[in-house]
Structure formats: structure tokens, C-alpha cells
Length: 232
Length: 232
Image 1 (cartoon, helix red, strand yellow):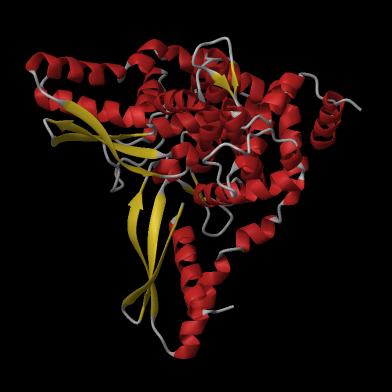
Image 2: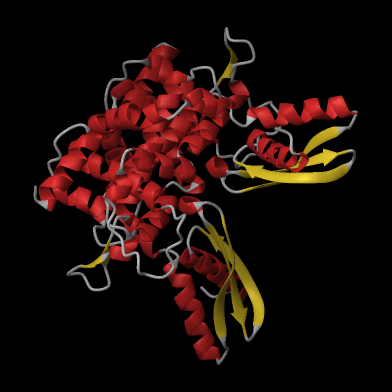
């Protein structure tokens, strides 16, 4: 099989339908390090523009999915769960799971490529952008909810961090210590706010964490405290 | 005309088609201060969930619009222009322009309602969410590009801040001063990064500004410097 045909087959397997416009998929897997000159002076083409588009499509489809799945949860919850779903590390993992790592074109000899880069997650977003341009909105929504969200354990994601705080509080009660949480900073814009929380143990700052909501920041701080205390 | 009929007519005028599911529009204009108890304990209903949804739809439609309109601009430019378009103050202005201020239901007697709140822009986002639920994606995309984006002067938006930096540099050349820009801080996540830039005038920090890109941060710093120098 020719490399072109192999690539076409691989894309078909991933998206679940024959791709039409192969160019957008080729572009989706072209990392900046392998970007190509274009006829436009100073404009090199890579998957970064598609990533911008795909990021917004992914965010919107997940917003709708959560909005409908949780009709009685407020927008803070929805924002938080979405940010966990589109978390860079999680996206990297899913990108590998569906085999994107074998398709990405990059220049491994270039400097400045961190081994744990966000390359795979970025390519996954770019792929979403490519699917959208090639197949339209409805297909892309189905692709995201059927092919991507299926790799998530949503319950685990929701309950995930909730454990650290209660684990820490239980430990403190057992050990007769006093534990408090304090939000020490709040920054950013409305939908992408960041909070910083500290764990105060017997009156002293013990650990610090940040997150997109107060709860998340507290959980992140609690997680760090649990790590330091080696609470499993 | 009954208040219900008036409301229906007003929505029809704004979205350009007869609304079907009136409930979502009613909810879109219900500010938190006028939120209502539901059958679910502890869950009060206001337009905040719809705002979350609408925000993501708006972001995505504008992403696609810019992606297609500017095929040779990189994702930094696209991100930047989108953030100017969905800027809270700008959205507030457009919400008033299309008459949302007359439809919003809020409790003006409640405390904590700043007079310059983001209430109108929030309601506009919620309206986008309502239109999406009522009419689907294609209609909403048309609504955003035809009815909302038409209120923008895109060229002005793009060139907007570019003036301050060159204005400052021209002034410095005229006056024989040395002016430099320095990025002093970079924070935030990938797509919502924030940069802080300083204007250094004859070796001393003269002004500071922040923005979603280095360029924007420099422009913001330059704008402040221009203000201080009273350069018109």
C-alpha cells in the first residue's frame, strides 16, 4: 500500500468514515517543527491554525454535552468538568490511545522539542478542526461524543479530586490536627479564572494549589498535602 | 398586546425568525438576581448555564469565521482578534445596540449589582445559547455572523491597538528619547495566556500593560504611556 493510501486508511479508522479532503488531515498532523513554506512570504503552514479551530469546536461540543447531561448543575461545575476533559495531559493520553502518535509529522532533530510536549493533544485538537472542515458540524459532534468522550471515565473525572480534601480532613481528625483551606489569590478573566488555595495545617501554610474554581484550587492544594503526608 | 406576545415579537425581531421554544429565551434574559427556585433543592435557575453554552458557541463560530477570513494569519492573530470580539465591554455594547437591555429581567433592589456590570454581555451570550438550543447550529452561526458581527468594524478592531506603539515610537524619535518594550511576565494556560509588558523610556520603567499576546501587552503598555504623555 502506498504511504498516501495507508494514511487515508488510518484517518478513516480514526474518524469512522472515509475522509474527503485529505489536505486538511495532512495539515492536522504537521507539527510546527515540520512546518512548510507557503507562497505567502513569512507564512509557514503547520497544524496550529487548525488547532485553534479544533480547540473551539471541542470546547463547544463538550459544553453542549455537559449542559444537557447535567441539567441541574451550575455553570461553575460545567466549566470545571469541561476544563478537566480538555486538560492537556488527558488530551495527550487520548491522542495516543486512538493512535495519533503514529501519524504526526515532526522534526525530531529540531531543538526545543520537550519530550513531554503537548504535541499529541495539539494534534488531536487539530484533527477535530480538520474533521469539522471536512465533514461539518453534526459529524464532528458525533465524532467527539462517540469516538473521543468514550475514552473518558466521566464519573471518575467528576469525583476525582473530591477525594483529596476529604482524605486530608479525615486524617486531620484522626491525628487531632486542625486543617483549614484558604483562597489566597484570584486572577484571570471570567470563564478562565484561576484561584490559588493554601492548606493551613495547625495554623501554618502546608501546601498550595491552583485551579479554575475555588473547589478545584482547594482540591489541588489538598492533593499536594496528601502527597507530602504520604496519605494513600 | 399581552406581555408574552410582546416578548415573543421582540425576540423575533432580534433573531430574525419566529422563536419556537419560548422557555429558553425567557431563561436567557433572567439575570441571577432574578433567579427562580426550582423543584431541585438548592438549584436556582438563571441565565448562567445558558451563558456558559452560548459563550462556547460564540467562541467557536467566531473562530471559524476568522479562520476562513484570514487564511494566512497565524493562530496568535486569530486568538487575539477573537478575544477583542468577545471582549466583555464590546459585548455589552452590542447587547444594548440590539435592544437586549429592554428585555433583561433582574432585581435592581438587590445589593451587589454594579451599575457597569457585565449583565448585558452575559445576556447576549445566554441568548446565543438559547438560539442554539431552539434553532440548531446552522441558524445560530448565521445569526452570529449576520446579526451580531455586522455591528463590528473589524478593520478598526484589528488596527485598533496597533496605533499606540507606533505613535509612541514616533514621539520618541521626534523628542530624541529612547523607548523600548520589555515582556516582564508570562502566565496562564496555552490559549488564554497573559503577558505583561513594560514601556522603558530612557532606561526607566514608564508604563505597564497586559494582554493575551506579546503584541497586545505591548500595545496596552504603549496606550498607557500615550495617555500619560497626553499624545493624541
